[in-house]
Image 1 (cartoon, rainbow, N blue to C red):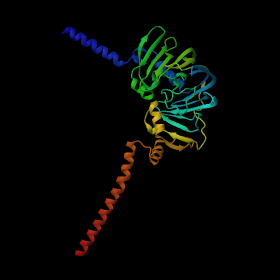
Image 2: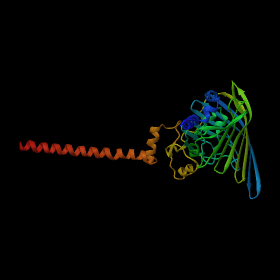
Image 3: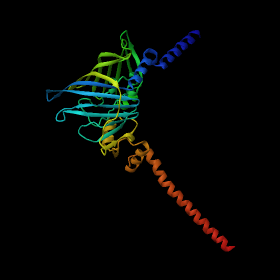
Image 4: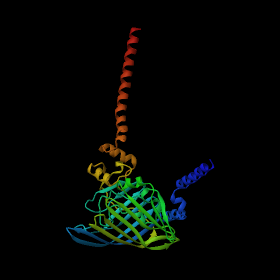
Length: 364
């Protein structure tokens, strides 16, 4: 009996340790990372990006190179991402072609590419914690699904809208993996492998982020750190992306050239620009779902008037265009059907009551 009690006690202790989660139990710098996230919430980060893109076509390797800029401006829950866009010929370089702005639950993509149409996509968090698989235009840099949070002094434990647990640790690093794969895979592809390494000597600053999904392995690796106002930041990042088959390989080196206080997170969009708003397509969309909603045109269309419409106006536009989800449509249509019918019943009852009253008076 005593042995049974001992084993039960050990099991309960193990369960408690597991329930606490690897992040809280094993990371002494968690509060420091939270302060870092808050400090970075009012900063603008300016990067210079050198990209080399190799693609093998018909047994022949073609190499393309470009140098672009990347500016990430944070202000509370609002974020803007601007800079140059680099693509393969005939598009080539687009100075100022990258234009994203994000709030809680959405990202607006006004980047210049094949189309001048602005797109608004749902994301679980914002553009710095989520990977937006619904890029309306795909460039060589920034590529589709690029994770900007690595370059903007954000808390790594909030990345990818999932929970992380420590799987290995030594004197130089903590190695973590995604603890709940479902939220992560819902944003990207059906199967995702994610691994995060934090640097011990640099107070938990990100050293490596590895993502493997959709037949492509992507690695963000910090090659240089800098300390600014008591916080360690990646100051040089090497980004690589390779297909499993080997036909495509990309390497970009990002160098941090300036950190300053944020003045504005706005981007300029010409008035009357057409907007395709997909926020009613679902709270989050993976890559396949993005393609599906675009093909089925499950978007609300309107013209830019200087700001996004609020939820009430967006619902009204969606209803007028027949783009509301079934649940919303059922509610809206039920009122349109029930109210006139109820008024008709009331009118018929009053008419009948008056008619009966006249007959009663006449008989009296």
